[in-house]
Image (cartoon, rainbow, N blue to C red; front, side, top):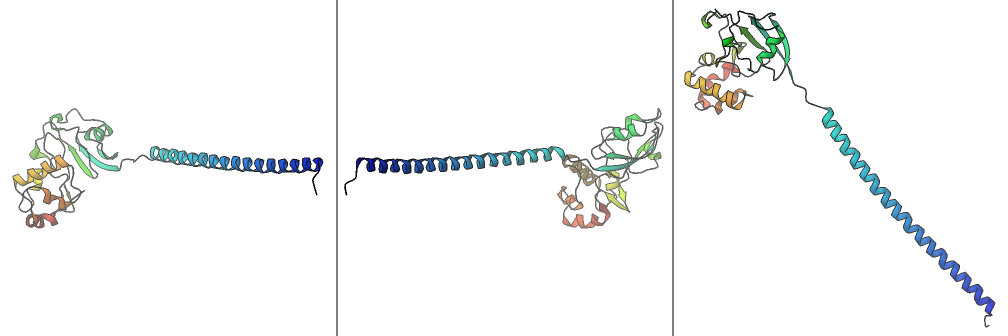
Amino acid sequence: MELTKKHKLILLSIAVIIFAAISIREVMHHRSKTYILASTSETTGSVNESVETNFEQEAVADPIEPRAIVVHVEGEVERPGVYELSEGDRVVDVIDMAGGLNPNADRRRINMALKLQDEMFLYIPHEEEDEAQNPFENSIKNNSMVTSSASNNGLININTADAGTLETLPGIGPVLAQRIIDHRQQTGNFSSKEELKNVSGIGDARYRDIADHVTVR
């Protein structure tokens, strides 16, 4: 049956409506995908920025606090006694805490820049007191006024012992004692007594002779 002009217009209108509906659906689907991708990207960026910010804040908020040390000071200071300081503090700091030096303190034998160590004993001598009269035998050399207790339970602390104390060890004479002190000054304190073998002239055999007589603090 031949379609009339009216029927043709109706069919054409229906086709146009269907085509328009399909086009609108495709456009809306495309826009939805674009929005989802954009939102995901923004969210990821925000999360990354948040993580970085939190990491930076944690890094700033958690500084490493210095370890506390305790030092005993006696002799020609205003307030002899036991003081708590921080690792890295120096003789000048504990003397300040002790009220400063007395007028009779022998300033020529004082090394104010010397770093303190935990459990250290410092003796500030009188200006008329020579080293032989000092009641504490382990005097730190190299322009230092300080007497340091270099032993612990009969063991010699190789990080604080002076040359004279080191020479009491088996097989250690003036030359090796000075090498131990030089090594300590050049590389820092010994972290273990086995590091004595890094000192020139101290091999396995000599180390075995002295290992039971030394300690590290």
